[in-house]
Image (tube, rainbow, N blue to C red):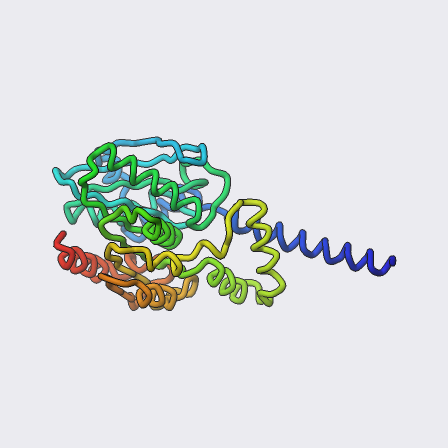
Length: 302
């Protein structure tokens, strides 16, 4: 009986340690400091503080359905009904979206950038890699259409977690944008976590994933299995441009290729030769811009 009790305590301790350790890393992933984001993008020539400060903008704060504020800014230098919403990746904030904002401003589009939950100035206690974020994106889309017009031409561009959020939103019933651009998304959160476990921890997934999935369900009230652009993609009727870099060793380019293959209807795929994760634009600016131009022209929006 004593051995059984000791075995039970060891097993329980293991479950608790593994469960809390890995779900803490997921839910409370360490974020980059704003100055760090600015310094990095300034170094790459992707951000200029004076240019950013010179732009006229409308800052907004809207209520998430989960009870916190979503903060962002709208930049409208053009007399047009064409708008792009840009969704940043995990650990950064909306200033990381400025490089894409400048790209689309140059192309004649007005732009909205905002902070995801638990990032930047927005509220929210946890990061859910697209699950809760897709509902916040829905709130932002609805606010913009109400603020401007239901008849706006709307595109959504997302990077990394922002790309996942974009695709999960697109897979919701409403499919509320005219097109989507997904830059380096994962195809499925569980598959991505299994890949990172193998690369970072060298731990057999069977010792971690069943526990982690249960703890996420208990602690943050969503299913890891449900965070899957691969499941959502068949519901997206609007055109999608998938972007990834061949050298990405954080989220493999094969995940975008898989999403591209499963997407029905109008779609386009661009695999950049250079660039680590989320660096396709930084390392391939002219080609990146050209691919977007071609995509927009094919949609009749060039």
